[in-house]
Length: 199
Length: 199
DNA sequence: CGTAACTCGAACATGCCTGTTCGAGTTACG
DNA sequence: CGTAACTCGAACAGGCATGTTCGAGTTACG
Image 1: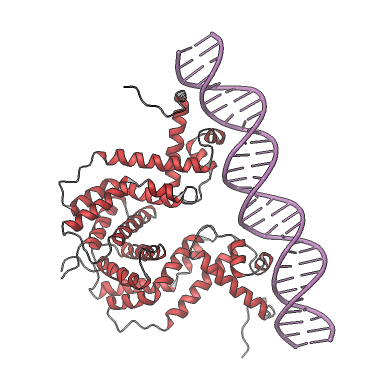
Image 2: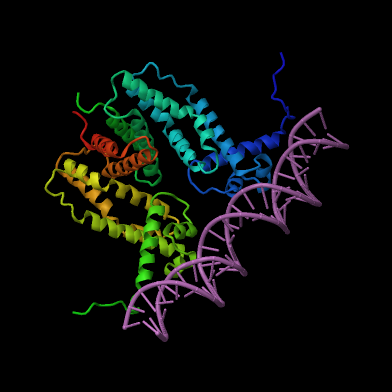
């Protein structure tokens, strides 16, 4: 059977073009994922590519932002694909997820904030980041298993977790916490928030 | 005794000028304290003042930013002056402080971030915000009283608290939490983080 | 190897932001 | 009431970001 191609089937891209696109998206993810106020020139420079080339592939700032978001989500899907957390109880699963994914979670959270002014909020909401979805599902499960508290709104628990993850990333990049310690400290803190107060 | 005036004693300001300065600082505090990327035009408009008038009183963006920070700190000093928390144990004192001051704490935290690119980091560090100092002192005291945990770095506990306060403010402004509920939820969460984990 | 795809510096138009100047009008205050 | 202080719109200059065009050079690929 033939691949069903979208209406306007374009000729395949040349290898060097594809390579540059990848570099641009990498650079965009790095910059958008860590600092606000990123300019097209910044991205081009970081990607080692001419500004004109950037505009060739991404006609506008908004196009680039959208592509970076989708790239981030693809990465997350690929990165989490290997994990199977369903065997572990929710609290242990959370720690496991955290150990490999907390940087990603933080980067995506920052990304979300930094592209806010460039993309349609509805579009952004539709693309629910699977990395974050995992975390949400885990909290849901933890509540169902009776391991996590029920006296606070679950939306709040989620929000608190995201902000604590961001806090850890901040402290790490400020040098007040080191890589190894950070995960443990963060994990311990998150569980303190999630666990029921008095049994 | 006569007031010791700084070297260049300038004639007193006229009442309308002072009124405009106040309006500008109010507006600046509101805007800088809640959103990044604030322009001089934004502040002027928010203050109900001409852009030229703004520049008359604050020759540069940096001058305005510094003035806003000092204004914020003055407000905090005045606002906390009434509170005497030394009678209460640290955890109750924290809840009391929170109840009246968490908005201020959040606004100042945001302010700090939003003026980062406009003022000298050293200058900013020197002006240690008393509102935040109070929180730090309280944590210190809670640890000394044995009410708060010692298994995590106190710098981390502080950072976590600030981010949780910000989380609550976010959720509030997003309409996912209402004013009354927010304080309780936040207080409960903060104490969950601070209290020693069950042995 | 030849052609189409691609890269990219230079230069331009546009727009927003920061500061500044001018000048005419308004307002506080002695 | 008169003068100095103050306000503020208009209009300017410089800077930086977004997009766009041109044209010459390089590179992939059949």
